[in-house]
Figure 1 (cartoon, rainbow, N blue to C red):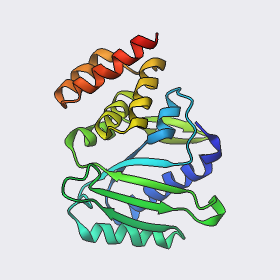
Figure 2 (cartoon, rainbow, N blue to C red):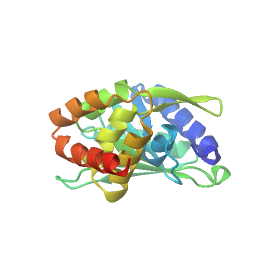
Figure 3 (cartoon, helix red, strand yellow):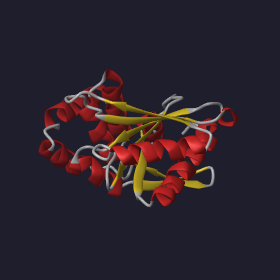
Length: 199
């Protein structure tokens, strides 16, 4: 993981935990994206910080929670902006946060979980020590499923590299079963064939 982003990660972790307390709403979150990929052993340059998050109630339906969360973040000298996708958008709700200048205005995208398996993935997140702070990171299998579901070229490349590195937490058999249940089995199979062809 790029430790140059460690101060920003620590602040985002603090910010989301503090928002939970202030709003009396448990926010569950875990790192995904390029930083999560690099956490599991893949060399990956990125300047982006991405989280998957969920809460009960969810801001997907609760507009008051959206406003309250944005107001709390802005009171911490950060910028907050909700982006709402179309009905069929793969990312129906995204919270963009920009940290203050003292943290180089680093930005973060927080994708709100909208499928049951995404919410379950947050429960399996693994705490990883980042420069003295425990940061929840998606389990490598759940990270691969998120990438397969997103379906972009970089996502597929990340999946292939994660499969090649094969972190010890990764069970390919269990991943195949879950991918098949989520109708992602065919695309996972293609990635596995690409990896075996390069071996």
